Image (cartoon, rainbow over all chains, first blue to last red; front, side):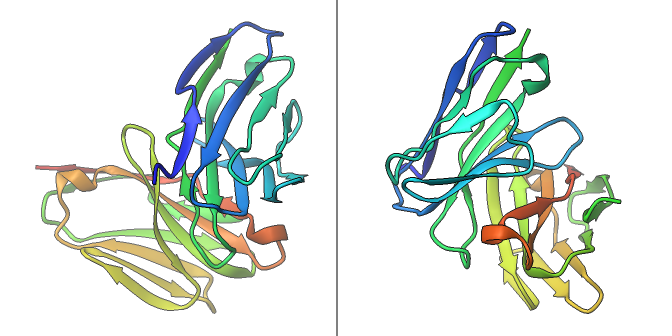
Length: 112
Length: 111
């Protein structure tokens, strides 16, 4: 099993551009999460999903959108990139609430 | 005040030392997680516990529910233990077991 795979690993965007961060997992997990990690801060939840077709906002959802059309994929979309969205983004999944989360390797995003 | 506080923020130890990292939380929890973030950035789950103590190799995690406190211990530390250790609380009142993360403790073990 590959686990949780995120692409790309690094990306530089210009202000106002859009992009999609990809996340896929091959463990058939229902729960999936998107976090951002800023220097000196704890991870913050952006969006989460409890299963295909179901998504909900986390603590910091503004400026982002998600979809969950399949169990495997949970892409994160930035529509109008802003410098405040410069961060490291992590995707995670878990089988159930009684299990730990499995994390991807992260995407380092810079917006200039 | 953050809902999950870790101490210390930074810790330098000599190889072989016994290490303790502390985590205090202010919310009612269903579980407490300890995570390790490697220097390359990847995050791995170490422990998930709701009571008592868990041990895996040289790592031990304990939790005191009444005092809202958890500790992560590393015995016989080694330079390969150098990483950021993150405590996260699954709030009992939170939706879908979502986690509240501490800011992490950066551990450096010198040979």
